[in-house]
Amino acid sequence: MTSRISRVDVTPVAFADPPLLNVVGVHQPWALRAIVEVRTDDGLVGLGETYADEAHLARLGAVAAALPGHDPFDLHELHRLVAEVLGRETGGAGASFGGMLDVASAVPTVESPFEVACLDVIGRATGRPVSDLLGGAVRDRVPFSGYLFYRWAAHPGGAEDPWGAALDPDAVVAQARRMVDGWGFGSLKLKGGVLPPEQECAAIEALRDAFPGVPLRLDPNGAWTPETSVAVARRLTGVVEYLEDPTPGIDGMAYVAARTEVPLATNMCVIAFEHLPPAIAADAVQIVLSDHHLWGGLRASALLGGIAQTFGLGLSMHSNSHLGVSLAAMVHLAAATPGLTYACDTHYPWKTQDVVAPGVLAFEGGAVAVPTGPGLGVELDRDLLGVLHEQYLTCGVRRREDTVYMRTVQPDFVANTARW
Ligand SMILES: O=C([O-])[C@@H](O)[C@@H](O)[C@H](O)[C@@H](O)C(=O)[O-]
Ligand SMILES: [Mg+2]
Image (cartoon, rainbow, N blue to C red; front, top):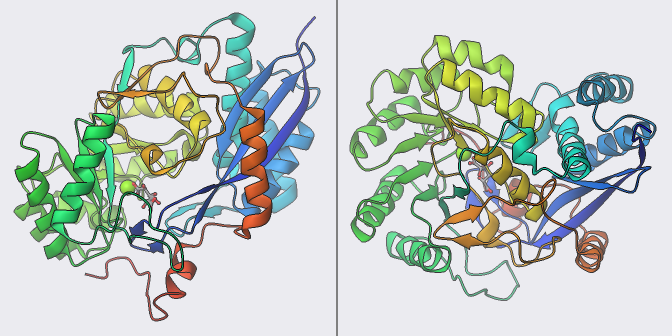
């Protein structure tokens, strides 16, 4: 008998998030995610994880309601169904995530967690890890970079966590030390766009002095003008392995790229397949950060890997605040993508709660071993899922709003890109 999808659950969850600063503001006390469970009539359950802003949740719910009766192996049909449901529900509107990432079509972001969950089902049905379904793992451990943030010691009115404030080079180095000692990261990324570029360059130079030979990245999320970006690139030539989104847009990045030897990376101006031709034609970026949540799932991200290789682009991986289901999916994808040669980003060390049972995903030497069990290789802990869902119900946060939250502290805060 062909297995059919019998039920799909989408559970919004909230987990405590520290006050991490970025160009659009500051992380709220709660980060939201949605956990997708695809059940089949032969008793399998596949997992996916995605954003949980209200509008996204409504779209996920509409697709979840349409999935029962469909074949979990038929991923082309899944794509067609998502496009049909969203066309009906939203007229094909785009979507926005966190004030930084705007996509012209919501289809890829909505399709992604269902595709991951179906691949988890297929892996469980066939007894093969998801990395095998993507062509096979070319590495058995996936290296990640330590993701450093400028941050406050505590949320307004909240308790301090063990990390403390980080608003100058010494504190950034101390944060990096904690990341390297605790997780073993062999490369470091600083989220910039928070302080004037001069101060962020000084922090990178302090990291270079404290961690000689460790690859470094700076990502101001488009906070600088093209001219400022060129000046920063000149200063940090030979210091950073790449500059990520120094300035907004393909044209701005192309202007900078033509004037520096420092490779430019992006998870902002190339976030969908239609952005690749103009970016490649303009030679705007040398490295694309893939992200299966945004690009339409694991197979679409593997396709991106192939296109990147064809056109000589490097490949790295983008992260947003996430839990263990996403980490497992990221690890399988990175393991099965030969051209993904840069350490992946992850926000994982910043969270203190999860929904997956501990044990499978562990950082050793800054890398996570690729799970070898069937599917994603991780299981939901239903008690933890319940706790994080309850937190969602009571926390009051319904969408990521870094700028709105920042204005509760600094009313005149302006979240403008290219501000310096
Ligand atoms: O978590 C953050 O504040 C990051 O700034 C995130 O929103 C970005 O999407 C991301 O990590 C990036 O690399 O641009
Ligand atoms: Mg980035």
